[in-house]
Amino acid sequence: MLLLLLVGYRLHKSRKASATHETHSAHEAHAPYNAPDSPAIPDSPNTPDTTAPPLTSHYAQICALMEEQQLFQRSDLKVSDVAALLGTNTSYVSQSIKAGRGCTFPQFVNLYRVAYAKRLMKEQPDIKMLALSEASGFANETSFFRTFRAIEGVTPKEMMARNG
Image (cartoon, rainbow, N blue to C red; front, side):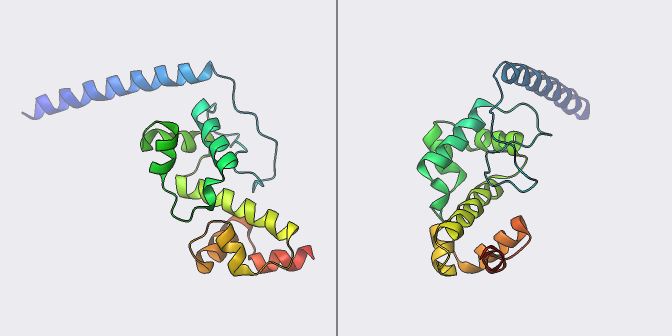
């Protein structure tokens, strides 16, 4: 019985490795998504992680969808929502983001939210923190402050004070 399980496992691993190799070969045929260069903490979440393998066209579609429809502004946004809009499954969306950006779906969305909040701070220097957090798609102010600080290294108030 144990021998059958071991043989089945090895077959599964062999097929999975073969499929992964074929998938990577197919993706290498596509030109990578070219996004502008940026500092270590990107102003635009679609800036690729240069240590990641070549980006998939799906990752580019996810970025375009986030930017065009500004889905990140929805505080209840789920990976299943993006998958449904793209006509694919949640695993493929998550894998595309992981390959293209090197992060999870929530981290990816939060990069967009923080970038948008920074833009609003420049455009509307008198904006209140609650309005800023809500406009950026955060469910609450606490989450906004925690996430902003984790990504930028300073709180939104500190950044606003520095900028003017």
